[in-house]
Length: 330
Image (cartoon, rainbow, N blue to C red; front, top):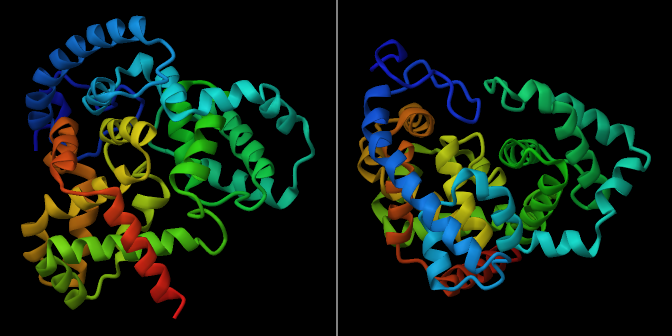
């Protein structure tokens, strides 16, 4: 592997995350040499589209195409707020966040959050200064949504939102949108919809790559072990950060279907690697290594293209959800 000593790139990325010791700087430089040019052109196009449609109320085909190609970093906070509808919700209750922070905290919830703060992005050099703000977001949301309260995994979602927006209130409203609209009932105590959607995901793999599913079952690694964190955290602290943000661009515009697209892409783009695993340890290591250093997921542009090359309809997902709920109820 190329080391940072031979690379023009730092061992810390632009968001403050330290790169892994075995990070492939050579391939990353090859990717970034073109991607940086693309980002520059894309920023100019976004400047034009925001002048024409500043409120982003209508996500037409053109805007959707722009979002899928990536929202420039400086525009992400406001664009996410608008395309998700979080901005309108905030306008309807402008004092909600401040009022929640001024209310009395439940000690059990406060203690649970405090325990997780040091575990949140310990490899991020900037995050030490953001932990108090992350606590505020999580404690406010826990008291706002009593059914969810605080659940492990929310710290990663809220933490990444805070890194991107650098704004507590925006992070709160975007977290609320994710938990209540994108992945509802994933973070409740029984995690009912998470279990349902893991079953849906397995059915989708069976339909598209039955040999992969048979091999995974033969090796005995449950889908819940492989993919629970993918769904709970929407890939935060799982995939390289720029790839996660490109996925989130699409999630805020198009909803939960994107989570399934990303999960399926991880399976299908690594189909041969999965089939070549000879035991459960090799399979577990493969999925760990995919997240850390894999060329496919590091090249966020190619990964997003692979996501949208998949044939996947909302009607198929909803049909499978009904089937999986029916099985659980019998």
